[in-house]
Image 1 (cartoon, rainbow, N blue to C red):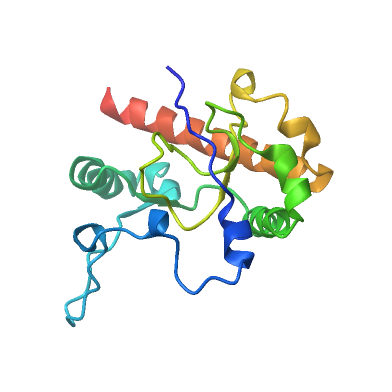
Image 2: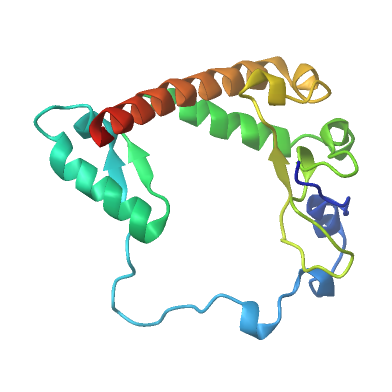
Length: 187
């Protein structure tokens, strides 16, 4: 079943109003707010996994242990030395910034459709009473191709369309290498 989301006003538009307080729908109860740490004890660091070490015969053993720990104890990790160029990542950041700087009328062309999470808006809004995030998102599947929403990608500005495709292909290649290496080491 595909995830769905109700349409809500754009936060960027609400923020343009002369507000004296944040609308109640965006204010979380005290027990749901993050606790700001004032201790000098360092916070735990997200595990970092080096793909180049996993692909190395000499270095993969300890890195596989780190991967196992990350998956078992954290459920996620940061992957470095994955082959996605820094320039491509910077272009993606720039393209995203350019998208969010577009006039509202332009961004509305990419608005989420009723009952869908892909597009411009907010994710996973399931009720009118739900507390919302103070920020808009743009979410879109690029791979596999059959998951793409035809009304989103062709309307995207050409440079960002190319950047999104390049990034998704880079991630696909990295993910394939990562999965292949993991499968080879499990068996």
